[in-house]
Image 1: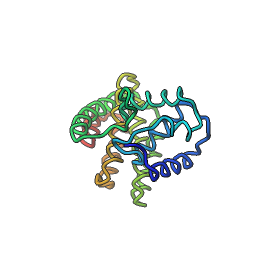
Image 2 (image 1 turned 135 degrees about the horizontal axis):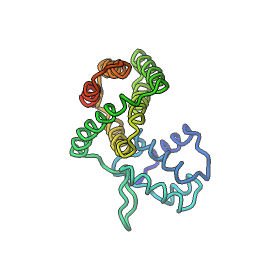
Image 3 (image 1 turned 90 degrees about the vertical axis):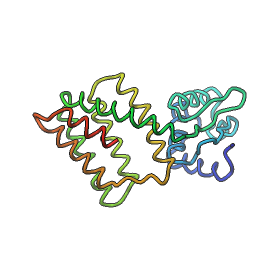
Image 4 (image 1 turned 90 degrees about the horizontal axis):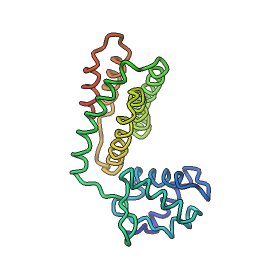
Length: 221
């Protein structure tokens, strides 16, 4: 299915909201199209038509194909030879395979991060947690998830395990897409905030049980 007129207008709006400038590089195009997919502007099965996007972005075929390859690497699109590039459809099987693996690996990252967390990282985590609490109070789901992502980024990065960080980057990209794609999915933000407050409490403790932190993160996911 190609992008119809209404979807093209939505994408135009999305680009304007991201302060899009003509003649952007492939990396910037990838970022813009990633946002459009995550926000649901582009849906599973939609075709990304090269000629239309080249005109819209003011770029040649080379950076656009670079962007497509990056999106394919992230698992957001499927490139079919002689047919084109399509936004990947998500199935229940995809979700059931993604989350258990992500849960175990992110729990492991939390466990490894405990001994390596710096005071700067803990302060950043505290600030993000405050923003999450503010978002819950204001019932701002989008702001909550934006800060939720950053909260997890902090301890995943603190694990200092490059292989683990890179694998989780891909898995978390998929799970974010699931949340945006399945509009019926609504988590109790108060419950979610409570879990993150407990995780932070244990990170701050001098003699915390690392497995408790890992279990909290794993069960939350």
